[in-house]
Image (cartoon, rainbow, N blue to C red; front, side, top):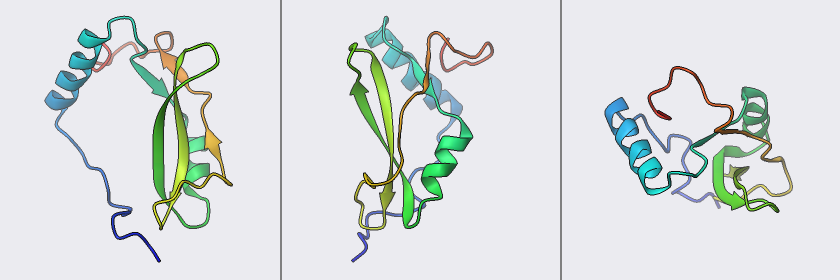
Length: 106
């Protein structure tokens, strides 16, 4: 039976000012930490294109070198991780691959 709390409309836009404040708060609390991770559209779309996928769950993780990672996994209509499907990482961390013109990683 589908989980009523799992909804493809979950999430929403926030004002740029909030995004700047929240990312600034994080950087101030964690000055040497990874600021962000970039995932390309292909892997994200591949996860979303799986049958019964309602969205993506993002896990905070540490790899075998204790580097911060983000693990992506599809979530089905029951709210369960689709662990038999595509699980992704291999993102590009910022730093070192940050944009040149973004106020969120300044």
